[in-house]
Image 1 (tube, helix red, strand yellow):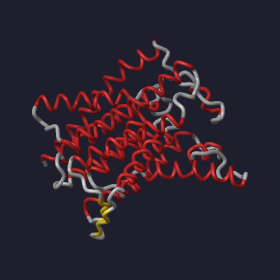
Image 2 (spheres, one colour; image 1 turned 90 degrees about the horizontal axis):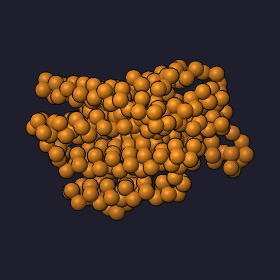
Image 3 (cartoon, helix red, strand yellow; image 1 turned 90 degrees about the vertical axis):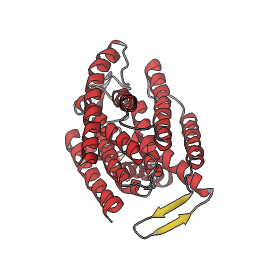
Image 4 (cartoon, one colour; image 1 turned 180 degrees about the horizontal axis):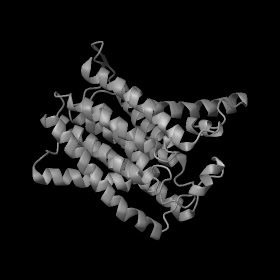
Length: 330
């Protein structure tokens, strides 16, 4: 019962603080002209979103950090090592996203940082996380707890973490193309990892990491009040990169890396659709999808934005519940 009360408290605290933050941030960003530039290559239906404030990730990032500080001051949580490295990744990718968004706003285009520069910085952050994870006693082992199989990877585990963090951050970024799509899927994913992590009693600071997940879930729900169709603000790269990095780092510290394939299943499918489209066009000069990633394919088929989002949210929820069954029950 205490666990349920703490989870509910974290959800509510994150939700309320994100609502308050949003009420201040949106008018401020409009005044500062922090508007999104919409690419003409995307569906014409998106052109009306031109000028909508971006960098809305601060609406869920600030409440999480403020909540953690308040809870620590109150003595409700301890600052564990695993919580520190998760928050480090969360903020490091947020800073990278902020720089990218700022350049887009300043030059009124969608270029931002070059792909090479962004990719290199993402790798550096992932490598720092791997170093901190190993220094904190992490084991370079891939576990299949359901089958009681543990695979020692040695230095290959570093490459695996590199792939996981960089891949997840870009997957969330790719999915962030419709109002509320990435935010809703991320809320479901962090809620699932909150439940899974709270069951990992052997993990140092498992309660704190779980509370982080629930705080972020509540903050994302508050953010969706402003981000669902028609969106009053977009999360931007600041938000999507932070969410992807935090999601992957929680998966690693909780030793449920493979569960991320299920919990982040929609993110994976969205990324694969883009990858398949690129390979098909370059190698065979043929499109598999009308437009990639997958959510744009459904738009081209004539689906409404709200229907696509609801379908993807339902898929994400079902996959996350399956992952919880595997990660907690089985």
